[in-house]
Length: 379
Image (tube, rainbow, N blue to C red; front, side):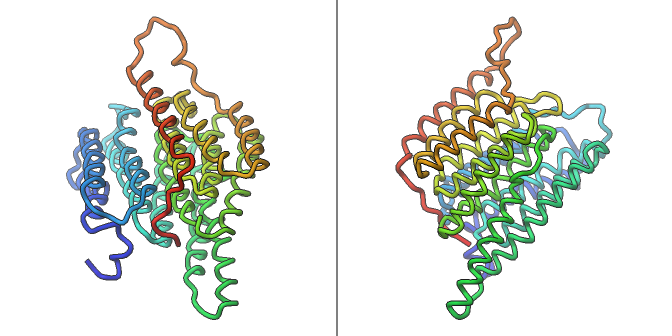
C-alpha cells in the first residue's frame, strides 16, 4: 500500500472488502451469466458487516453504520424488484451489473477520508444512474437534467474542498476557507438533490437514496466549521419550504428527507441523520406503486424520532419552524395505508416485522438524545 493513501483509506483489509461490488460487477460482465445476483448481493452485505466488526479501522460511528446500510442496497433492490423474464439478455445483464457499480461508488464515498475522492465517486455513481435511467425515452430528459445538477454540485464541492487546503497568510487563508466552505456546502447540497425533483422509479430511487446520503454524510463532517452549520441550517429550512409547497407527494419524499437531513447535519445529530437514511432506504424499497414512490407508515417512527433529536438541539424558533414545515410536508407524502386495511389477502411477515424493527430502533435512538458523536475527520 502506498504511504500517501494510508490516511485516506479506513484500513487495508476493510478497504479491500468494500471493493466487492466492483468485483461482482466485473465477474458478472466477463461471465455473461445471470440469475445468481440475489446470492451475490446478500453475500456481499454479510461480508461487509463482518469486516466492519472484525477489522480495525479509522471509521467513526457515522462511517460504520452508513457503510453497513449502503451495503444492503443491492440485496434489497433485487428482493423488492423482480426483473421481467422476457427481457433480452443485454438488458437483463445491464440491470444486474449497474446496481453493483453504483453501490461500489457509494461505499467508496462513505469510507474514504477525502472530500475530493468522495465527491468524484458520488459524481461517477450519479452519471451511471442517470445513463441507466435515461435509456427509457420517457425518462431521458428528466434523468439528464438531474445529472447536470449533480455534476455542477461536484464541480463546486471539489473547488470548495481544494480551497480549504490552501495555506498562506492568515488573511488570505481565512478568505479561502470562507469561500471554500460556501462552495463545498452548496455543492454537496446540489449533489444531494436539495430542491430537485423526485418521482423516479422505485428501483432507481433506492440507489439514488444511497448517493444522496453519501453526500449528506460528507456534509455532516463539516460540523467542525460554525459557518457551515449556519449555511446548512438555512438551506435545510428553505428545502423544507420547497418540498412542502411546490412538490406533489410522489416528488416530495426524498427531497423532504434531504432537507431534514441537512438540518440534522447542522446540529451535529449523527443519530438523526442515520435514522433518516434508514427511513429513505425503507421508504423507497418495501412499498412500490408503479412509477410512484409511496412510503410505508413504517418510516414514520424514524422520521418522528429524528424530528425530536434535531428539535432538541435547535433553538426554539428554528425548532418550531422545522416542526411546522415537516407537518406541511407530511400532508403530501402519500403514505401507503394498505398495511392497515383489513382484507382476506395474505400479509407478508415484513408488513409487520419492518414497522416493529423501525419503531424499536427509533425508540432506542432517543436514548442518545444528549450524546454527540464526534466525526472522525473533516475536510
